[in-house]
Image (cartoon, rainbow, N blue to C red; front, top):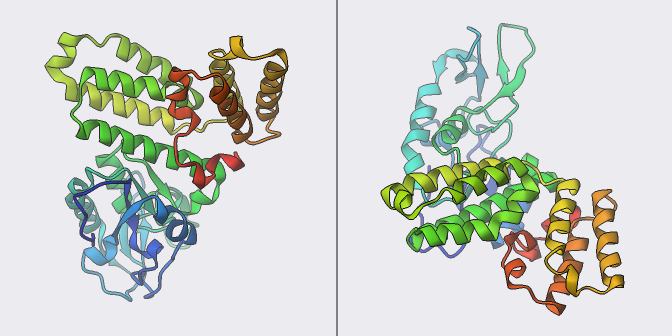
Length: 329
């Protein structure tokens, strides 16, 4: 069940599977404490823990549950492993529906991989007796959560071991956090345009199609149209933004953005400085150096030749540099 949440939000607040924080709530009375979550991310995020199986009244310890699909199609159910007549599908779905309103201020959520209640992908779904499980399932609780909050960044703790997936998730979390700060200040047309302007290159590094689509959306933004239904417009903007940011930023995309950004300062650079910048960008394009190498050099040149527009771009620092998330991608 959920813990109490503070009304004061000074940093991103995330939902999380309770077992990942070291709480003994699993079916065997144990936990799955994740050291990266508790030792690193906890310095930057506030966590609110949930255990849906415990919340619907199952004891700890308890008989394990699994996903089954004996009928085929989309009829996936959560049942007790040794007694399929004991089903918890509806209870888990109802619980997810009931707690989703509590998550309006959440900037993300970390779920337990492989869990029949919390797994985000590749959860085992068992069919007929003696047939191998199909690893294409989604935990019942998380499936409902994703349906209710498609804009919310959600990731499994197991996938956070991948440097590129980890950086992508944290980027989305901090982008959502900045969006929530914008809403808390009172959404305006000018505020929305400024938010988009500062996130343009970050989005371009992930998904050029979304970048162009949101550009067209903002260009059609008239004062009259926004005044009529600004909230609906903002909801559609956020949906498209989060869809775009879910795409991974690969070296080729980063290199293209860095070339674009370099164009704003190239007239100030000496011939040697241009050559050095291009060399670092090309090295990253070939995946020879992490993206932090050309970005660090670019920041050096921006200090030497200031440009307010580029300095305000979240692409240069979408999350705290102390997390060192770009050192390995």
